[in-house]
Amino acid sequence: MQTKIKTNGLIIKQQNIGEQDRLVTILTRDVGVIRAFVRQGKNIKSKNCAPTGLLCYSELKLYKGRQDYYTVESATLIDMFSGLKKELSRLSLAEYFCEIAATVAPTEQEAEEHLRLLLNALFLLSKGDVSELLIKSAVEMRLASISGYMPDLLMCPRCGAYEKDEMYFLLSGQLFCKDCFEKSPFPYGEKLSKSLTLALRHLVFAEDKKLFSFTLSEESLKKLSYITENYLSKKVEKEFATLQFYKTISS
Ligand SMILES: [Zn+2]
Image (cartoon, rainbow, N blue to C red; front, top):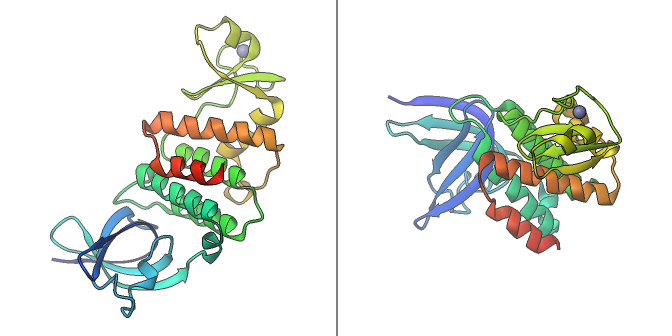
């Protein structure tokens, strides 16, 4: 018995199998993260080769056999974000986004929000007019938030303060005002200026279409990026190899 599925998906990992075939991991709109076999996927003469390459977004016809993996019956390319290949730092950052998605996105259930976020991020990264650190922070914090790791940024949990000149973010996901933080037993928190507090809230609460539209000084953006990557890494208990590579490239 075969289940047939028609969906759209982004290829987030690609492995070669033997001479001609390919195994891909896909972030799909309808069934989340899946692994699928592409017969003749490595053969450049095959029509399924180009649309199942890494970072390609394609319309897919899949079937699921008796075992727990899928086979790509046919694939049609929608976008390949060709601007990513213009700079190695963009490409390596895109691969980091894929590794995060592979880690946190659901499997065997719809993942439209995850997919849309990744596509928007790759589109901006590919165009190259938005800062890489801004896109990186937004993807890290938003993917964490929609995958069950939303931090509690509404107010200081002790006194209810919403906004202070100085607040402290704990990597466990809590936000304290300065006074309460200093009286708390927590040894370490990231000091946030007012603009950083607002930026962090923006990443969690902004509408999808406004997510990447904010400005911050270069220095604050570096700090935001430091906070979001450490928050995500701590929550999912993982060091991302692709992030280390991106840092090597971009430094
Ligand atoms: Zn407080």
